[in-house]
Amino acid sequence: MKCEKCGKNEATMYYKETINGTTREMHLCPECAQKEHLGSAFESAFQEFGGFWSDPFHSFLGGGFGSLWQDMLGTPAATMLDTERRCPTCGLTEHELRQTGRVGCPDCYQTFADILDPYVQKVHGATRHIGASPAAEPAKADTIDTLKAQLKTAIEQEDYEQAAHLRDEIRRLEGEQK
Amino acid sequence: MSTFSITGGFLGLAASSRVRLARNLKGYPFRLTEQQHEEIAEKIFSALRRNPAIGAEFEKKQIFPHSTEAAALVEQHTISPELAQNGGWLIASREGGVAIMIGEEDHLRLQVMGAGLCPKECLETAQRVATLIENETPFAYDERLGYLTACPTNVGTGLRASVMLHLPILTLTGGIQQITGFAGSRGCAVRGAYGEGSEAVGGFYQISNQVTLGASAADLTDRLVETATAVIDAEKKAREQVRARQEPQLRDRICRAAGSMKSAFLMETGEAIGCISDVLVGLQMGYLTGIDPQSLYALEQAVRPALLGGAPQERDEKRAQLMRNAAQNLSFT
Image (cartoon, rainbow over all chains, first blue to last red; front, side):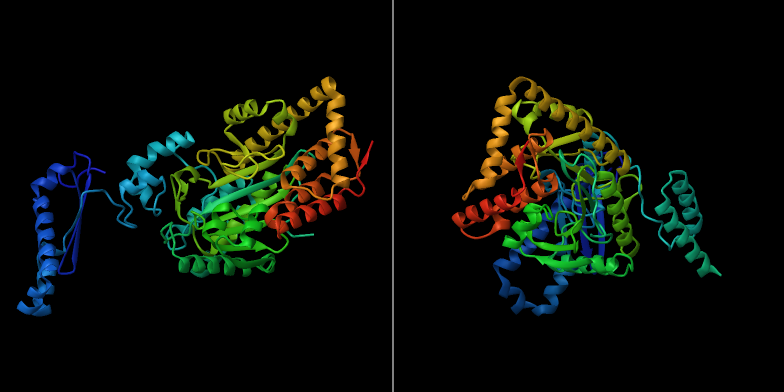
C-alpha cells in the first residue's frame, strides 16, 4: 500500500485516532508521519497515560470523572499510534502474518497483497483461481443476467449440477420480479 | 449401504481416497471463539438438515480436546489430529463417508472418503455438499483468488485430494525417494499414511495434490489419479522384480506373516500392521487367498491402540484375537 499523503513511498505506519467519537485512519510512510508530527502525538499520549497511572487520585480529586473523560477524549490522549501495518478488519499485524504464515480474515488478502501475492505465486505457480465459484449475490441489479451468463458457461463446461442450480435460481428471481 | 458409499478401482493397492475442501464463512474472521464455532456448526448442520434428500443422513457432535473418542476418530481418518487437539465440532454422515470438521484453522473442512482409487467420485460428493451449505451461508470468496483460507497454501479451490497407497515393496527396495520426485514433478506430494510429519507404517503412503490455485478442482484431481496410477504400476513392477530374483525369501516372509496372523495370541501394533501389509502383498501376488483387501484395510485401522482401548497387554490380546478372527479363511495357495 502506498502512503496516503505523498502517494509515493510504501506506507509502513498505520495511524488511528478517535476524537469525540470520530475515528480517523491513515496509512503513511515514515517521512509523512514525521511531517504530521505524529511521533510527538504518540509521545504526549504516552505521557498523559503515564501521568494518569502514576498519580490517579490527582485527576479524581482535582476535576472529577467529567474532566478526566474530557481530557481523554478531547486531546490526543486517546490516540493510538501503531508503527506497524495492521489489517483494518481483524487487526492482524504484518509481523504476526510473517511469523505465522496465517492470515486473520478474508480482508487480509487485500491489506497484505504486497506480501501475499508474491507468496501465492511462489507456492502455487499461479495467481488466479480457476473453477467453481459461488452463485452471484441476489442483491445485485444484474443478478439474473450474471446468472444467465454463468448458466451458459456451466452448460459449456458440462457442469450440469451447477447449471440446474443456476436455472432454479434464475426462475426464482424471475418469479420475484413479476 | 450408505448414501455416501464410494468405491473405486485398484482395491488391492489403493486402500482409500479422500477429498477435503477448506471453506470459510463470509463475515467472520478466520480464528473463531468457541461460541462462534458452535454457531457455525449449527448453521452448517441446519443447512444440510433442510435438504430433503440427504438431510437426515447427518449428525452433529462436539469433539472434546484430547479425548479418547477424538483419538479414535483420528485413527479412523475421520478427523484430523489438529481437531482432536483443539476440539471443535464434527458433522458427519451416519454411515461414514462425509465428515465436516469445524474448529480447524479454517471454519470448515469438508471431507469425503471412499474405498480404492476414487478421488473424482469423492470430489463430486464434496462439491455437492459444499454447494448445499453455500446456498444457505455464503463462503469467503474472491474473484481473483477463489475461496479464501487461513493459510495461503490452500487458497483457490481449497482442495486437498489424496489417495492412500500400499507400497511395501517400493519401500523395501528403496524406490520411495524416486516416487516422491516423480510425484513432485506432477504437482503431487508423498507422505506417510497418517498425514503430515508421520512415518509410513506398513508401507502405507498418501499421495496428494500440492497446489490449490491455478487449476480447477477437477483438473487437480485428474492429475492426482494419473500420478497415483503410475505409482501403482511402479509398485506392481517392483513386486514382479522381487518375485523374479528372490521368490523363496518373498514367499517365506509372506507365509510367516500369514502364520502369525492365524496363530499369535499377543501382538503389538507394529507387528500387526507389518503382518497385514505382508498378507496384502501375498493376496495380490497369489500366494495367499481367502480374505479380501478391504477387510484387511479395516483391520489395519481396528488394531490401532486408541480404537482398541484398555491396558497395553489387554490390547495386545484383543489385537491378536482380531487378527485370528480375520484370518479364519486365510489359506496358502
